[in-house]
Image (tube, rainbow, N blue to C red; front, side, top):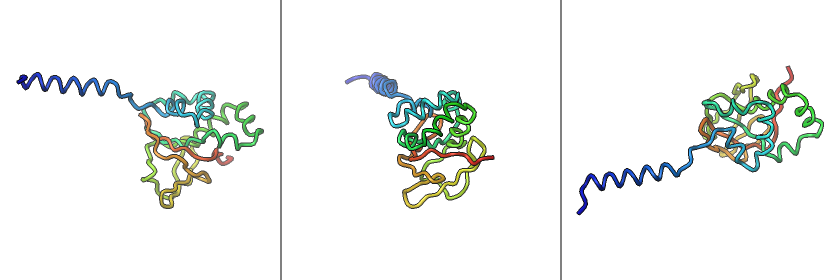
Length: 159
């Protein structure tokens, strides 16, 4: 029979090696970069200079427009965003909230975005909406918060 310390050491070694092969959760910026349906968002986050923010400790909640949501925007709007980095940064910051908000915790009402304007959140059964967008995929985990994939691009109110 093996010595109990040997068994404990072997169990610890097995546990540590299992942990070492499990990848750590990615940040919100890296999660977007790794998600095929968020490739447009990932590129625009980099263009706007928001990658470092979305890799910071947070936590943040990001309502991430899918590639199809960006395709639905008028070409003129996309051109304006590409030409004006401040506008792009404002639009993308409007999709983010400080703190981690899981779909189950959404309460109807207003939440202040990182951009500064309020977002209207609502929930009916398992359906969550933000402004006029529907959450298509909720609670995508990230090391510094959570991502909810939405079906449209939100535009902040004009000041």
